[in-house]
Length: 68
Image 1 (cartoon, rainbow, N blue to C red):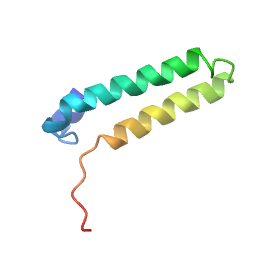
Image 2 (cartoon, helix red, strand yellow):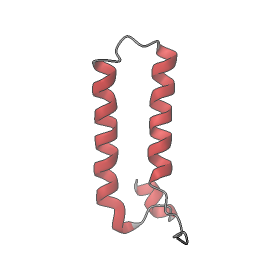
Image 3 (cartoon, rainbow, N blue to C red):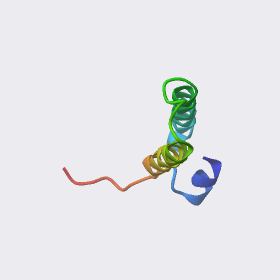
Image 4 (spheres, one colour):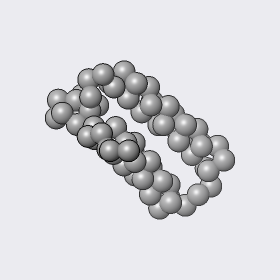
């Protein structure tokens, strides 16, 4: 998150919320992988982790406002 902040792609106003969202996402995914999803194949596990982290990081990027 600090790297994103310094690169200008994460708003300083969103830093604290972004940390909480990142923690909640990683915690939730880890609990699923240790529980109900523990039997999924390793390749699916890796794809799920990669996809989750990719969506999380892209979701935190500052975007210019869109016109309604």
